[in-house]
Image (cartoon, rainbow, N blue to C red):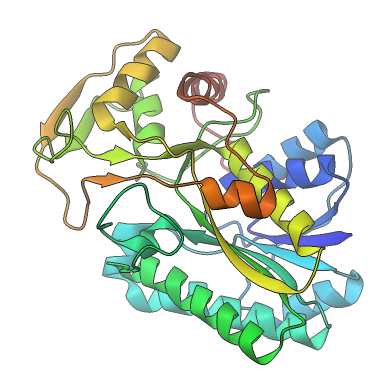
Length: 339
C-alpha cells in the first residue's frame, strides 16, 4: 500500500515515515521544507534502509500535487503538512487558514481526482480549548480558542461533511496531545526554527547551553504546584498511532476521531525535574506572567483509541526525556541548516 505523507520531513512526519515503513507500507513524501530539513529524510532512509521518493512541494500547489499523484499510484494519505505555532496564528490568521484549511481543500480535491479516498489527518487537542473536565474524551465540548485550533476544527468538520455525502471514504482524525521525545538512535528529533515555542525543546536547549534559562508562564494555576499540566506523548507512540489508524481503516469505509495521549498529566515543574534527571543538568528557570490563551490543565482519556485502533501509549516520561536529551546532545544545533 502506497502512502503519501505530507509534511513527511518534519518532526512527527519523519518518525511516522519510519513506523509506516516498518509496518510494510511504501512511503512517498511531499514537504515544502518551511519548517523542516531534507536532512531528516536522509537520516530516515538510513534508519529504514530504503529509498523514499521526496518532492519539494507545497500542498497549496495543486499542479505540483497532481504530478506526484500521476507518478505514483497512491492508495492513501497521512496528512501532517501545515503551520502549527499558536502565537503566530493569532498574528497571521490569513496565513494559517490559507495553508491549513485551503491546502487541505486542494489536497482533497486532488485525491478525489485520482480516486484516493483514504486519509489520516493530524488534528490537535487544541480543538477542545479550555476543557470543562479532565480527562478529555472525544465527545467532550469543542471550543478552539485561536486560529490554529480553529483551522484544525474546520478541517475535521470538512472531512466529516465529505463522509456524510460520500460514505466510501476512509478517514481518521487524530487529536494529538503534546508530542516530545526522539528516535532511540538520536539521529532524528525535534528541530524548531529559531527560539522554540514548545516546552521540551526549550528545556533541552537550556540544558545544552544554547539558551540561558526557561521562562515558566504562570505559577498560580489551580494545579498541585501552580504550573500548567499537559499530556506528553512520545513521538514514536504518536507515529504508531498513524499506522494503527491506517490498519483500522482497511476494515471498512468510515470516519472516526481518536485522542492520542497517555492519559497522564505532568506539570511544567515536574517536566523540569524529569529532564534534569535524564540530562544530569540543572535547568535554571523563572516564573513569569501567564501567556494569553494558556489553560491550566489538559490531558487525554485514551480509552477509545485502544478500543477503536488497538493503540496505547507505551513510553513513560523518563524515556521521553532521555530520548530528547540524546537527540539534543548529539545534535547541538539540530540538523545542518541547508535544504
